[in-house]
Each structure stands twice: as structure tokens, then as C-alpha cells.
Length: 478
Image (tube, rainbow, N blue to C red; front, top):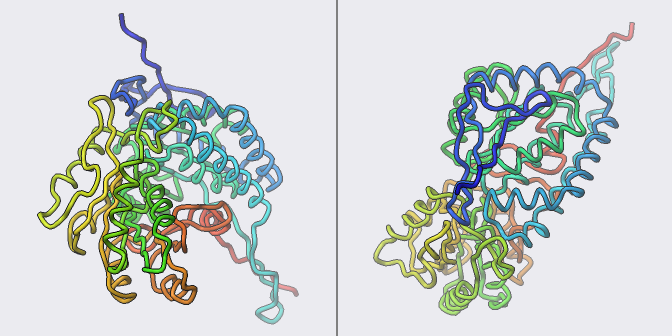
């Protein structure tokens, strides 16, 4: 006896559709390793249809008043709350995340972020009108860009969808959004919710693989391409978008340094850092995965961190004691395992370093010490529940190690010395610096990196402005 698989579909111009050629992809629950649904493998015809729908809907949505767009987004936020349990169930089946933490740590911020951008819709700011040439008055208009092609990742499928569509829609753009091929379920449900509020064509979802995303970016209709993903994917998007001078918004990888000085409360710092490193199985571009500890407390800190790792639990969504669930897919499990398998002889696995169970893609909380700055696991993003530890002798060396990678998204400094914290926050070459904490984000503050972590900001008024263009209008007074 077989269980019928759920059939997910694209959402184009206000209706759900299969891929034009009928092709599908199997969708796997990472907690079980079993297929539970099929998703469209969208091709050029599907991309064309979605882009045409978004382009046709753009003039009316662009010309809607900010108050009208705000009202729509507030309704969407309310609908997210009303259908919270459905969204949580879909997301946890997508990702294997714990139900409880998804309910408390992800859904409330998502709703808050939608409401933030609903308010931002009515706060488009520009320079005041002025006479900068005799007999002429100049004004600045902020306008929506047009159709936005957006690609969301598999680590936070729902939240990253919100980070993309909320500012874009608030500014008056229309959207074609593609979820990851491994996590389409919650995004398709979001489309159903959006369809109860928005006019047809304003928000569209197409499912598929990398070729689908590539076709979206290469399509002539979108004026902007936005992606959260790997550095390699971001570079490919930037190269493709350059061919017709599309705007590009990139939130890519991270390798966050966590700089711990000798004056900290070791027990409290370890408690907070371990959670920030292992939460969501370390599948977070800002995760606290690269710890730099002053040499005077290195051994004590490593021992405490290994003990914290041993006491951290990974488990299925219904496991109330689990801090995190499985890695998202078989390829990711292979990647994380490969980093540990290739560790140099001078490295030491202090905790974990192995798969957990034979069902699903669970990996043990892992701590690795004895590493050097040029080691692969220090320089490259693992994207798993793995925390590395290095020692440093002084501020200068701490900064050398911290800044000595190609990523520049997030970082943190742990010290009781205020002046030192200020010096470090100035010198750390990262888009975010936390002091005595790591990983909290708020809708009002920008999130985005430098170097190979990409460019453009998510969240905040800066993220909102990224989805607008500026026009100068000059009029003669005579």
C-alpha cells in the first residue's frame, strides 16, 4: 500500500498551475529521508508566464497609494498569524526544524517584519524640493523598480521569502519568487495566503531547480534580481544580470568570527555562543561558527564548549528537547561530513564529528580545535553544526584572524572592556558586529555583508530603499 504524494504547484497570475511540460521534482523530508511531495520543475514557458503576469500587474500596483499597499501587507501579516500552525507544519516538513522553536523564534519575527515594511511603504523619503539653479525647482521622486526576480534559500525558506517580498511589494514592485528545490512547500502555502489579499500577478511563485533560477535572472522582464544563496550562485547571478544591466541584490555566505577576550564570563559566553553556533544546525550565514579565544583562557573555553556541545540535542521536529533538526538534504550532509573527514592532522575533534542515526540527515554538534588560519575549515563555509576554535595572543592578531577570510557578513566581540569593544567593532570588516551577543536581528536594523558575502541590505529602511529607484524632476519657474 502506497501513500499518495502531495502535489505542489506554481502560483502564476492568481492561479495554481503545474509546470507547462508536466515535469516534477521529488521533495524529501530531511528528518526522515523520505519523499513526501512533488514540486514543479519549471522551464522557460513557466518563467515567461510568471514574468508576463508580474509585468502586467506592475502599473496598477505601482500606482496604488502607499496606504493601499500598507493595508494589503497588514492583511497578509494578520493572515500569517491566523494560519500560523499551517505555516509551521509546512516549514518543519520542508526543513525538519523543531516545531516549538519555529513557532517561537521564526514566525513572530516574520509577522513583525511584514508589518515593519507595511509601515515603510508610507515613509518614502527624499530630499526636499529646492532651487539649485536660478529659476528652476528640483524634486526627487522615489519609485519602484519594476518586476523583481527573487530566489530564496533552503535554510530559512519562510523567513527569507518574507525578507524578499515584503520590501519589494511595499515599494510598489511586483514579484516572481522561486524557493529552493528542496524546500518549496511553505512558499507555495505563502502564495495561497497572498492570493487572498493581493491582485492577480502582483506575487507569483515558480518552483524548480538551478536552471529555473538561471532562466529567471536571464529573462528580459525583471529589472532586479535578488538572491540569498552561496557565493558561487551569487557570482553567477551577477555575471548573468550584467548582460542587460539588471540591478542585483546579493546576500551570500558567511564565516562569522566570534572574538572572545580573557575578561569574559566563560560559562555565560559558552552558553550563548554554543546556541548561536548550533541553532538551525548551523545552517545560517551569520552562525557563530568560527571562535577566536585569547590564549590565556583557550583551554578552559574549549573544554566548556565541548561540554556544551555534548549537552546539545538534535532531533526530529516533535522532539521538544532538540535545539536543532537535521541538515537540509543529502548533499549538505555529505558536505559537512567531508569537512570533518578532511581535517588536517593538527586538528582535534573535541566533540561530535559524526552523523546521528541512520534515518534523516542529522549531524552531531561538533567542536574542532587546534586549527590554523589557512586550514580549509577556517577559510570556507561549512554550513553545519560545527564550531571551530583558534587562539590569539592580542587584539592585533585577533583582527588579523577575524578579517582574514573572504566572507564579511557578521561578527561578534566578547569583552567587558568598552573601549576595546569599540576599537574592535570599528576594525572588524563585517556588515554586522555584535558585542557580547551573537545572532539577534531586528526589522529596524540592516542586515548584509561586504566582500564575497554580497551587497545590498535586507530589513530596515536601507533594505526598503534597495527596492526603489531615484528620479530627478526639474521644473522651470518662468
